[in-house]
Length: 288
Ligand SMILES: [Zn+2]
Image (cartoon, rainbow, N blue to C red; front, side, top):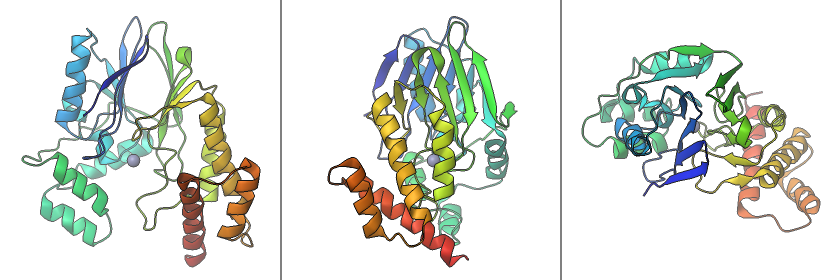
């Protein structure tokens, strides 16, 4: 069950839905216009959000994609707005326009390794009957950064990259100090096992630290982070990334180091992060 949340006087968002991998959809509203964040994983998904907004008398003017992954773009056509995307996101969408989304095509791509079973299964669950997925080419493509004045509310859209997807883009709402992270802070799930790399994480942490954040949202998490939790998370990623760069530091040593830095036992999530950094290092060593 997805719920509309009112985060501030300018921001509404629809909570994520695990079952079919629906991410957060958000609307940032100023006195002049409304910016949507992400197009969702189907026409039904974005339409549900727009219906809720109409009830609140909000009509979207433009939409920004946080990255090219299917669950963030499949509702593009139904959104019926000006679409903004980073250069690599637009390139990826142009490629996806050529792809078929039938069960056979999905199974084939899982088999040849160009798609992961997790996404193929979620696509089949979200798009049970018709799968006429229309992906229009984004209207506005930017390389690094865009600022949008919505009328007394200003959004910064910036390409930050990271391991999850090289095109990852964040949206920062200045007046609310609110940061929409998309999926940028998640690991790369398109490799098995999932991984973080030291370079990817360090570059991402540096890009994200520029922002003065009171609230941060990840696209597939219901709970938000306050500023302190957000900065703490960046510190953890940075600490592990720096430790994993030294090849002499094994997993046990890195755990001990993080544990003594935090002055407590590590939780499941932190143990997983360390493991994913080790995966990244192992794969890089393997690839020479
Ligand atoms: Zn993603």
